[in-house]
Length: 111
Image 1 (tube, rainbow, N blue to C red):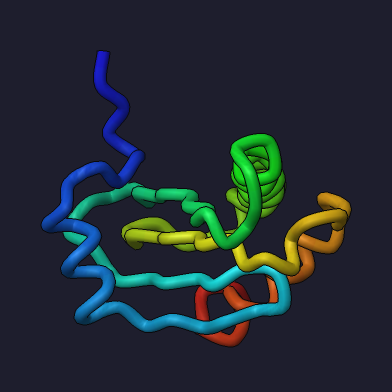
Image 2 (image 1 turned 180 degrees about the vertical axis):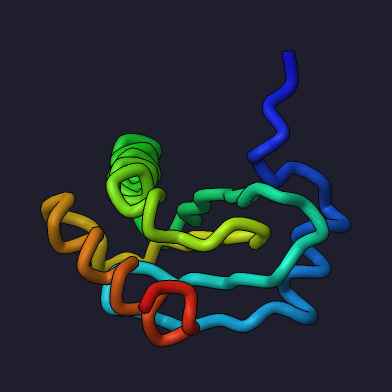
């Protein structure tokens, strides 16, 4: 069964990269763009610059959990791309959550 709320297609990523608004935070970069759906689609990325596979997977887990805690506050109908920066290593979930909150407020997603 395929989940609809996850960004997967290359065309979606290209559209986000070309037309989306982005804001670099301390631990993450958030890219967002309005979509035509009634729900948010999201993706969490960590490049090899973040570290080995253990560190990259931990970065993705931190971003997912931080978004999960903030999800009720986000408006619906957006494509969201969370990209981990190498400063995410050795941080706590609360710090990543603050970084996501700050980037979301800066982009006008959170009030």
